Length: 322
Image (cartoon, rainbow, N blue to C red; front, side):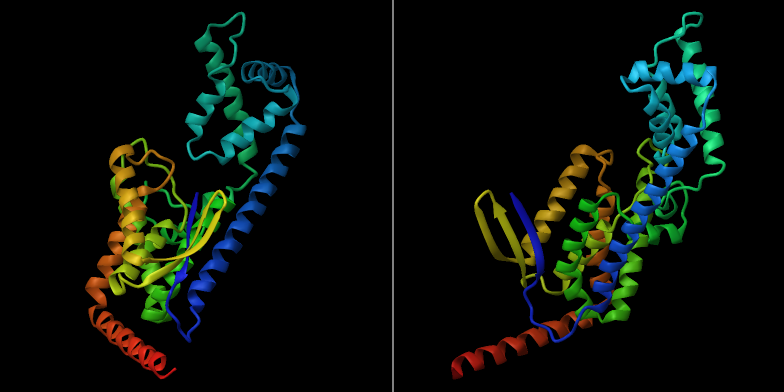
């Protein structure tokens, strides 16, 4: 079953240029992330092709035996896993964990020996290889770098990640931009990116779940919060698919918001932050978006209500004249 919001069901003569720009920016950034990953993969292949020596061959054979891999592929798998990892020490321990012990060494000595060899191997590789673009853009909650709080919002982990976020973003943000205007809208996007990442850092600081994060989802939830603040009863055009049923539905914004926000709160309460999804950013994004609306744009909300009332009045008059 698929339930996908498409756009706000409100006519407007204005084009949400910033919303469209952000969509193209996210797509371009992810394309560059993929190109960066491909370049790193080529460097790994070239580096491993030059590795030789008795000790190296023995270590690779042991790792291949433990992981059930072809020995020719082990070097590339190990170097790639460590380079793309956000926790290299943990990754190294996991790589070595299943390696059979050497005959003349204990299990602990074998692991220590292999770890030392792999660490030296990776240090040699990383000394001439930059971080991936994703690693340069992501936000690490161990620091409070405002720039990476912003850049992380526009980078993603997969095509499904970026496309899914952008569908939801356009459905709500286009209308919010038209309500606020491009300048205030841009400021709110930046504040949401900073606010959701800052909240995430405060929640996970000092815990095992203190991992880097990427994605626009916190900003998306902020847009949902602002949409609901301004026009809670206006409808969102949604696409519904279930096996053989295809429909376009119009669902009140507050119903969708309650559904999305409710599930995020439920998952965060029951599963915590170790789900692979930044639920803290989701929940805080919605709360921040709604709060920004209430604190900063009360007068604008009243203006929007008056504009909608006037628009409906004209619409009813035209219908009566037909």
